[in-house]
Picture 1 (cartoon, one colour):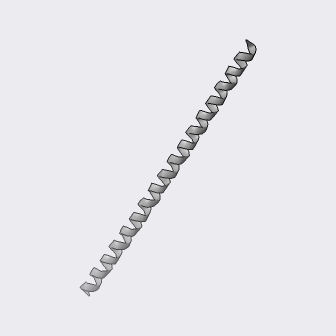
Picture 2: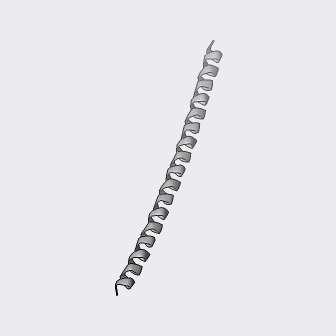
Picture 3: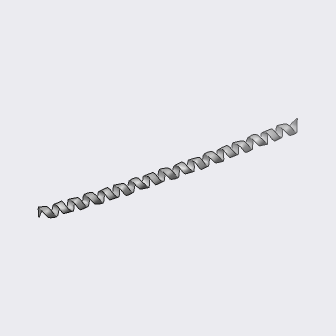
Length: 64
C-alpha cells in the first residue's frame, strides 16, 4: 500500500505543478495583453495630442 500511496502523492504533486504552470502562463499572456492595450492607448493619446496642437497652431495663424 505504501508504494501506491507514494505514487498517488507524486501524481497529485505533478498535477498541481502542471496546473500552477498553466495558470502562470495564462497570467503572463494576460499581462502582455494588458501591456499591448496600454501601449495602444498611449499611441492614440499622443496622436490626438498632436492633432489638437496642429489644429490650435493653424487657428492661431489664421487669427494673425
